[in-house]
Amino acid sequence: MRFRRLKLSGFKSFVEPAELRIEPGLTGVVGPNGCGKSNLLEAIRWVMGEGSPKSLRGGGMEDVIFAGTATRPARDFAEVSLLIERSAAEADNDSLGESEVTRRIERGAGSAYRIDGRDVRQKDVALLFADAATGAHSPALVSQGRIGAVISAKPVERRMMLEEAAGISGLHARRKDAEQK
Ligand code: ATP
Ligand code: MG
Image 1 (cartoon, helix red, strand yellow):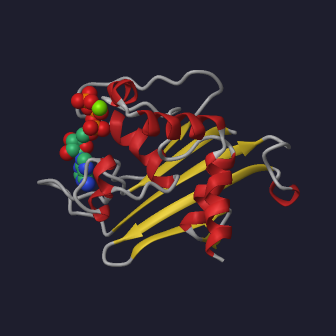
Image 2 (cartoon, rainbow, N blue to C red):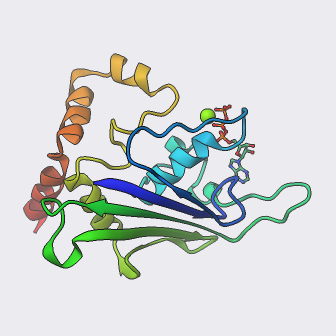
């Protein structure tokens, strides 16, 4: 799976609609302190289904919505879309190629997810990324301080990280689902 493009609107400091192409290879984000580098990585994690406001440096999920400044009013929603490209091996026949995953949150109304414009559940988005060995908690996304967390993790936690990296956490999620039925 490759990430091709990220679109943000009203997400944290990205108040105006912004669009970034993600080219093949290593992507570096540079800029002065506080310009929004970490917010970009958090937008990627958020659209992939991150459910913990704390890991997005917020107290509640609505804290991802632009909160306003002295000169600009707050927004009442945040929306992030991630365009992904899947290989034939990763995709079902009906969704081969490019897909766009969108998450939107409105004040007082919670989060909604769409894949290519269709309403889906958080779980559908999580499984899409789990099958491709990535996801909101993927070791492929290394945020500030995360290296230390990997090094000091307990064996069980480190196994979970490795399983996610190996792409088998999607299987675990399905097994849990099947056991509950
Ligand atoms: P550093 O180099 O220090 O790591 P950074 O480029 O990673 O900085 P971020 O942490 O991504 O910067 O951005 C911080 C900025 O985002 C702060 O100015 C903060 O006020 C702003 N910000 C975060 N959440 C919101 C929000 N909900 N509404 C408006 N601004 C926000
Ligand atoms: Mg940062």
